[in-house]
Length: 277
Image (cartoon, rainbow, N blue to C red):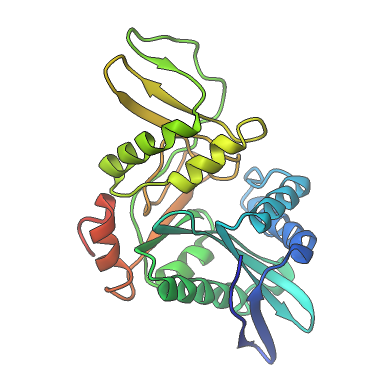
């Protein structure tokens, strides 16, 4: 994981945007939970991030994974927020992005987002996606100002799956040999593969990750990756979307501020962006 260092001014004190390190895990995990707990409580919704222990665990996992880049906003030696970028596909995924509740509304979130987008421009990523909590209109306004466009709703379905079987179809645990076939399927449906995520899901299947391809006698027909409980909807591989559900809404957007980087590049890479806006 590597990222550059930038200095921006938020209010009167310079804020440094730098690469996250393993030593930042405790601070970033705490802020991650506090930020989402604060906004959820304000809107009388469940806390999406679950618990401080979970956010600390997830931050640690991302910091250890070379497929993620982490950015930290720091002022006077104090960590104010962080942003993580999933770079395991040609479509980068930003999130989670979190700012300490006591440091919000001071430009920290914007500085983190601008640094993240600049990094992906320099990497020549084909596009960028993110999932946004739709009842948090301040963050939505920021993403729109940065050039993101709402693409589509995503749904999170909770509960135990029904015990049903269908003739000619079976579900089994995915294996490394399934990655290529699942990648081809994802490309046909969404216009790009997500093999890096699938490999990680398979590698971690014994822990919190799970995946399973659906097979027929003739051909591989589908696959699903559940990943961590953090914003991994079962049926969403699309790079650019906005998801909403009945009481708490989540969304995802695609940036289009710079045609060559955003809408234009993304429209060439993925079918869900086939109509530049």
